[in-house]
Amino acid sequence: MSERIFVGADHAGFQLKERLVNELKRLGYEPVDVGPKTMNPADDFPDYGRPVAEAVSSGAAKRGVLTCGTGLGMSYVANRFPRVRAAVAWSPEIAELARKHNDANVLVLPARFVSEEEGMEILHKWLDTAFEGGRHERRVGKIDS
Ligand code: RB5
Image (cartoon, rainbow, N blue to C red; front, side):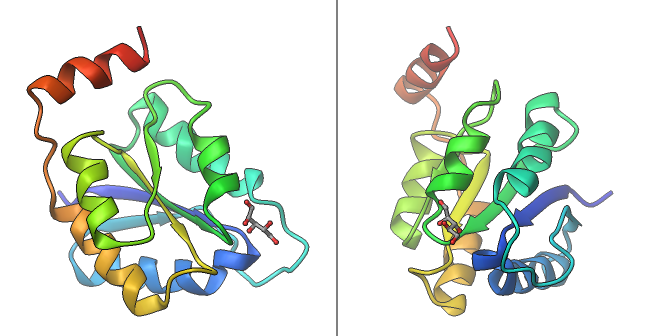
Protein backbone atom coordinates (compact mmCIF):
# COMPACT_ATOMS: atom_id res chain seq x y z
CA MET A 1 0.00 0.00 0.00
CA SER A 2 1.33 3.45 -0.83
CA GLU A 3 2.03 5.96 1.93
CA ARG A 4 -0.63 8.59 2.60
CA ILE A 5 0.83 12.08 2.91
CA PHE A 6 -1.48 14.87 4.07
CA VAL A 7 -1.09 18.15 2.17
CA GLY A 8 -2.53 21.61 2.87
CA ALA A 9 -2.02 25.26 1.96
CA ASP A 10 -3.63 28.67 2.08
CA HIS A 11 -4.19 31.04 -0.85
CA ALA A 12 -0.51 32.04 -0.95
CA GLY A 13 0.52 28.40 -1.28
CA PHE A 14 -2.44 27.20 -3.35
CA GLN A 15 -0.64 27.02 -6.70
CA LEU A 16 2.39 25.27 -5.23
CA LYS A 17 0.15 22.86 -3.31
CA GLU A 18 -1.49 21.75 -6.57
CA ARG A 19 1.97 20.99 -7.93
CA LEU A 20 2.99 19.14 -4.76
CA VAL A 21 -0.10 16.94 -4.88
CA ASN A 22 0.57 16.02 -8.52
CA GLU A 23 4.22 15.35 -7.83
CA LEU A 24 3.44 13.11 -4.86
CA LYS A 25 1.01 11.12 -7.04
CA ARG A 26 3.62 10.85 -9.79
CA LEU A 27 6.10 9.48 -7.26
CA GLY A 28 3.63 6.79 -6.15
CA TYR A 29 2.46 8.32 -2.86
CA GLU A 30 -1.17 8.81 -1.91
CA PRO A 31 -1.56 12.53 -1.18
CA VAL A 32 -4.56 13.50 0.97
CA ASP A 33 -5.39 17.05 -0.10
CA VAL A 34 -7.10 18.83 2.81
CA GLY A 35 -7.52 21.94 0.66
CA PRO A 36 -8.18 24.55 -0.28
CA LYS A 37 -9.80 23.04 -3.37
CA THR A 38 -10.15 26.41 -5.08
CA MET A 39 -8.25 29.66 -4.91
CA ASN A 40 -9.78 31.94 -2.25
CA PRO A 41 -7.67 35.02 -1.38
CA ALA A 42 -9.55 35.37 1.92
CA ASP A 43 -8.82 31.91 3.35
CA ASP A 44 -6.80 31.42 6.57
CA PHE A 45 -3.78 29.15 6.96
CA PRO A 46 -4.80 27.59 10.34
CA ASP A 47 -7.90 26.06 8.72
CA TYR A 48 -5.69 23.94 6.49
CA GLY A 49 -2.63 23.53 8.68
CA ARG A 50 -4.61 22.00 11.52
CA PRO A 51 -6.00 18.90 9.73
CA VAL A 52 -2.56 18.05 8.38
CA ALA A 53 -0.95 18.44 11.80
CA GLU A 54 -3.73 16.44 13.46
CA ALA A 55 -3.20 13.55 11.05
CA VAL A 56 0.54 13.42 11.81
CA SER A 57 0.08 13.97 15.54
CA SER A 58 -2.49 11.17 15.84
CA GLY A 59 -0.45 8.77 13.72
CA ALA A 60 -3.12 8.65 10.98
CA ALA A 61 -0.27 9.66 8.66
CA LYS A 62 3.50 9.52 9.09
CA ARG A 63 4.16 12.72 7.15
CA GLY A 64 2.58 15.93 5.94
CA VAL A 65 3.39 18.84 3.67
CA LEU A 66 2.18 22.42 4.16
CA THR A 67 2.70 25.65 2.31
CA CYS A 68 1.79 29.31 2.84
CA GLY A 69 3.48 32.59 1.93
CA THR A 70 6.42 32.56 4.33
CA GLY A 71 5.92 29.08 5.78
CA LEU A 72 5.87 30.64 9.23
CA GLY A 73 2.15 30.65 9.95
CA MET A 74 1.83 27.00 8.95
CA SER A 75 4.84 26.05 11.07
CA TYR A 76 3.35 27.82 14.12
CA VAL A 77 0.12 25.88 13.74
CA ALA A 78 1.72 22.51 13.06
CA ASN A 79 4.30 22.68 15.85
CA ARG A 80 1.59 23.13 18.49
CA PHE A 81 0.62 19.49 18.00
CA PRO A 82 2.41 16.80 20.01
CA ARG A 83 4.84 14.65 18.04
CA VAL A 84 4.77 17.07 15.09
CA ARG A 85 8.14 18.39 13.98
CA ALA A 86 7.44 20.88 11.21
CA ALA A 87 10.40 22.41 9.37
CA VAL A 88 10.30 25.43 7.11
CA ALA A 89 12.70 24.60 4.29
CA TRP A 90 13.69 27.05 1.58
CA SER A 91 16.50 24.98 0.09
CA PRO A 92 17.22 21.26 -0.42
CA GLU A 93 20.08 21.54 2.10
CA ILE A 94 17.74 22.74 4.85
CA ALA A 95 15.30 19.92 4.00
CA GLU A 96 18.13 17.39 4.18
CA LEU A 97 19.28 18.59 7.60
CA ALA A 98 15.69 18.83 8.83
CA ARG A 99 15.41 15.09 8.12
CA LYS A 100 18.92 13.98 9.20
CA HIS A 101 19.11 15.95 12.43
CA ASN A 102 15.53 16.89 13.35
CA ASP A 103 13.47 14.00 11.96
CA ALA A 104 11.04 16.56 10.51
CA ASN A 105 7.72 14.83 9.82
CA VAL A 106 6.06 17.89 8.30
CA LEU A 107 7.68 19.86 5.50
CA VAL A 108 6.64 23.51 5.25
CA LEU A 109 7.41 25.40 2.05
CA PRO A 110 7.47 29.22 1.85
CA ALA A 111 5.59 29.60 -1.44
CA ARG A 112 6.45 33.27 -1.90
CA PHE A 113 10.18 32.59 -1.57
CA VAL A 114 10.74 29.44 -3.62
CA SER A 115 9.90 28.75 -7.25
CA GLU A 116 7.78 25.71 -8.06
CA GLU A 117 10.88 23.95 -9.39
CA GLU A 118 12.79 24.68 -6.17
CA GLY A 119 9.77 23.44 -4.25
CA MET A 120 9.93 20.11 -6.08
CA GLU A 121 13.65 19.74 -5.35
CA ILE A 122 13.07 20.49 -1.67
CA LEU A 123 10.21 17.99 -1.58
CA HIS A 124 12.35 15.25 -3.15
CA LYS A 125 15.20 15.80 -0.70
CA TRP A 126 12.84 15.74 2.29
CA LEU A 127 11.11 12.57 1.07
CA ASP A 128 14.33 10.72 0.33
CA THR A 129 16.48 11.58 3.35
CA ALA A 130 16.47 9.35 6.44
CA PHE A 131 16.83 10.44 10.06
CA GLU A 132 20.41 9.85 11.23
CA GLY A 133 19.44 8.88 14.79
CA GLY A 134 22.35 8.56 17.25
CA ARG A 135 22.99 11.80 19.11
CA HIS A 136 20.10 13.40 17.24
CA GLU A 137 17.70 10.79 18.62
CA ARG A 138 18.51 11.97 22.15
CA ARG A 139 17.98 15.61 21.21
CA VAL A 140 14.73 15.02 19.34
CA GLY A 141 13.53 12.91 22.28
CA LYS A 142 14.06 15.85 24.63
CA ILE A 143 11.62 18.04 22.64
CA ASP A 144 8.58 16.25 24.06
CA SER A 145 10.03 15.29 27.45
C1 RB5 B 1 -1.10 35.29 3.63
O1 RB5 B 1 -1.11 36.54 3.04
C2 RB5 B 1 0.19 35.09 4.43
O2 RB5 B 1 0.21 35.91 5.55
C3 RB5 B 1 0.32 33.63 4.80
O3 RB5 B 1 0.34 32.85 3.66
C4 RB5 B 1 1.58 33.23 5.56
O4 RB5 B 1 2.72 33.74 4.99
C5 RB5 B 1 1.51 33.40 7.02
O5 RB5 B 1 2.45 33.06 7.74
